[in-house]
Image (cartoon, rainbow, N blue to C red):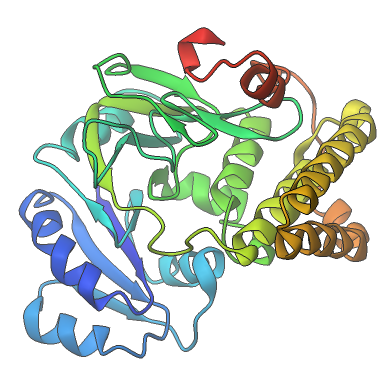
Length: 328
């Protein structure tokens, strides 16, 4: 199976310098590409001089995460893509078990275990041991609920179906990528991989975590906590719900999500976090303004499978104080 590792980069010269050697050392069976989003920090010159074996796809401008990969992957020929963040430290044999999984099963999308780079005993925020969403579109993971990270005690070292795979280390068959049209470029960045996996789920595809493979993720290198992240969080979550919820439950569930977002906004207000409060309002205004365009993206969805395992992760976490996946 021809495999290509595609690393999206924007002004990440220092990250490439730190993490590319291990990627090269432990990924001899794959072609390695850097898709550069018009960096201005001499990333390309650095790559050319120090890593001549790395193939380069140079984009004309910073397209963000979603369009950056959509444009870049057009220039990469492979049966299996690995979309890898430039702040991921791979490990020996990280690739083999995942590629074997794709060879032996009909899995469409997969991720390894993602552990925290700074504290390697714990799971990483971005994907941990495989992602899920609740009824209202709130994301959580095996190994991570909101900001609570579980210690890795080998409790998730198995192959397990999940709802979404982390964009930090995202394996997808090329034919599935093309069938679903890649990432939604309107998202720009944040939650586009969840939207993609939801579309895949609605199309009957399987997403898994391969627990025999693990990598370490720095996290926050692309988009640290900020008002911008708050905006993308709320806007993109509503967009993917509008696109992917079953028709019969679309508006009742959206209404409840609007109420929950309103509560979050009031919480920001009482904290004195006025910028985040206004970001929630801005996100909703953006959703209302693009409502017609977003609705047009909805495919014919037949609700053959329930997309959520738990009704409300907000209730479980904040009211019932359940902070570990196995407690749900």
